[in-house]
Amino acid sequence: MISLVLSLALAAAACTGGVAVNGPVTPPVAPSITTQPFNLTVTAGQTATFTASASGTAPLGYQWQKNGTNIAGATSASYTISATTIADSGSTFDVVVSNSAGSTTSNSATLTVNTTPVAPAITTEPANQTVTAGQTATFSVVASGTAPLTYQWNRNGAAISGAASSSYTTPATTSSDNSAQFTVSVSNASGSVTSNTATLTVNAATSTLQITTTQLAGATLSGAYSATFAASGGTTPYTWSLSSGSLPTGLTLSSSGTISGTPSVLGSFPFTVQVKDAAAHTASSNFTINVVNPALSVNVSSPANGATVSGTVTVSGTASDTVSVSSVQVS
Image 1 (cartoon, rainbow, N blue to C red):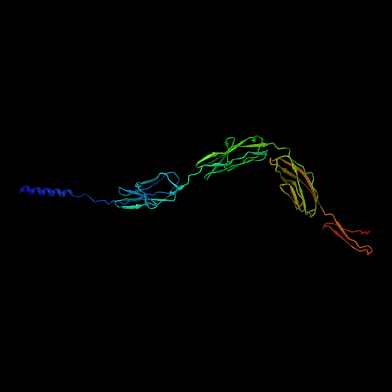
Image 2: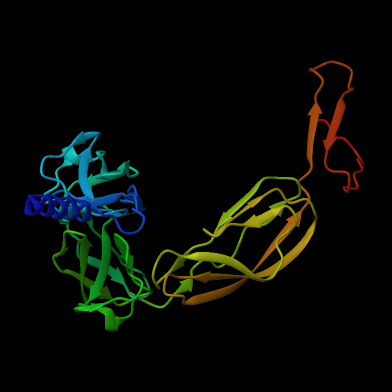
């Protein structure tokens, strides 16, 4: 009887000791997004990886979503699309992070997928150019491919500094430029292509530049005037200018070598005209334009045969003319 009571007491003591709790219990912390996924831009075929970081009591569970729908198997802190397509462009991605205390959803990140760039191709090759010494030469190319396209012109295999557009114009040529060879390389994100070679031919200027006009016609006060200078030799085109003196008031000289206008002042007007060719050679000549009054005209109304002699004499001129009629003779 005594042994039975002792066993029950020991069992009760063991049971009481097994459920004893020491100290306060800490509740789990709900998850919080610390690093949001961000927008991505890729080219079709490339991978795209979205990542997020979260805090909270472990273990944390992740579930990525595309356009609000769960993605099967996407249950880690990052999600990778191995080969993007154009159909993926514009899709939004977010992640839901959860634990025993709750869940939270990240901001949405947008995926932009660009088309694969097309490598450049030359559609119009640069052409050979022939110029006269002193002139410039322009080479041009037309290329296709995904923009932006970049250009680099080369002379005899060496890059030309600053020649980075679809055309290239040389400085004024000299005999040393003869037979120079030009190419252009066109590039984009997908590759590059080099054009065929274009050859520059530079011919010598034909002869010495000279003005062939020797004199100019006189001008009439208040009358329309026009005269054009001529030159030969050198390298066309020519540019004309007044280097000294002055033209009669009312007249002007164009760069093509034509004097035109209506003179409004009497007098003699000496001046020097200069012509410049494409090679910057010049020639000059002296000229004078004399502006005079218009010639007087007399109109007589004659009487009929047998009639009394009477009539009208009409004299025309300008305000500066001195006019007198000394006699009228009828025969």
